[in-house]
Length: 570
Image 1 (cartoon, rainbow, N blue to C red):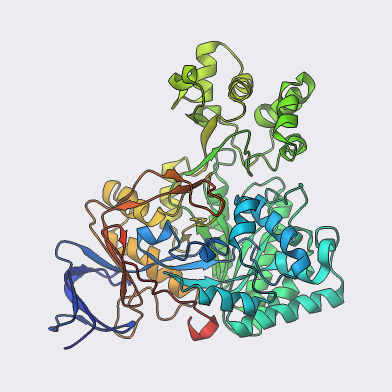
Image 2: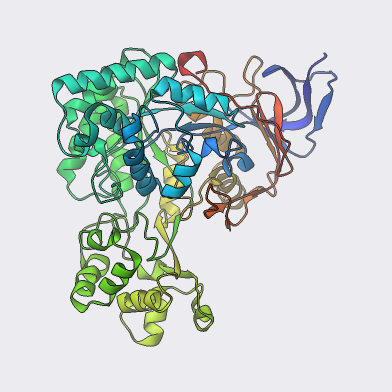
């Protein structure tokens, strides 16, 4: 057999979960044409002896909507065997957008997703107004990976209502306009719609995201417009499924998701099934509710993370970690000098301390000072503190944890970098979550929180930490979790499996060495801004649409990805 690419002598994990086997894979153009005991020749031959050959991984939760324009290689996801990405999550996208709304929308994205305004202003070309025009712009950059684009409810609402979108419910006429924009996007190839009502996602001046103001009836109606097409999916970031304050709100959120799933019969994914220190059994309660929904035949799928979600920040750049705390909201949006004055004011410090230490309400920050670590310091005399928790330092100094935290920051002009797990600190809980049959293991947040979180290496972490080191699942099952299951759930009909006729998206790696390397800071954003960057050990090849994208951790120079438009590419 003559083909364009031949992968030989590899152990094939086809994505089905069935036992792996030795074999060859023949590729012509963008497709797999033969698998198994085959002979052939090709201009490019990869000897995969001793390596695992898997379908390319599918990351269901990224925010590369802006980064794709200045980094079409889509780093760091490309280094970890990911070949297909879903962007436009959490109700945020960059279209549709009128020229007068570009700055407000960038401010929302900057605050919620942790990308600086300077980077967005210099890096986003704004050659579009409508969502179809945005898709065309993405296609023109020739991305390295396959992209699936969700529409975001917040920009749709902003487009229709202007700045009123953060102030009031929509009228019936405005809801109809939103539905028509959704139809326009779906006809152009959108994959569906994302919505966020999260209390920790606010704009640059503390205002709510536009989608958070929407009433249930509006969300239901707008989602119905997607259902008219009979394909696609939804992604929700509900009000209280993560940071629960009122179980009645949780029930209302879940009732809305169930109603949408029942009406549209389309997959509905939501954030997320994670372990939280302040609510250590919430994940198990949510599993029970999901089991009930599936018994009703409703396709509700939780997005889950397989690793501790480690958050880096300083009090000069607080980002979103304290955004849901009432007293901290008063200082978030002040200048650095004004913020420092507040941090020295005894009355204000008392209020801020209440939020971080005494407030019994579950929040994004766990109040676990034994898990709040000093990560980087500015002054030489403070270097012995690096790697120690605030609780450990406070105990050694005989001081209050809050005072240690604040005074160290003030001493270093608020430049001290702290590191804390936002979630998934209990490994026994995480093991159950990733083995839950309906979990979509992902939540990389690629393209977002670029200075604070780096979870794009989650596939390498699952394969190394959970499969090899902890035997939490078989390698066959892990490949299904990373590739076939998300592809099938989201309707990506020709991705996620190694079969003749499927797209030639492959990850070839060494199961004995695969692991994510430690993140490090690079200054390569538009405007030379910083971001975390993470490569991988043990990933020998990533192949996208039949072309080798990375070889032994280096980019080959090819950009073989494509925008997967609607049912035509799904």
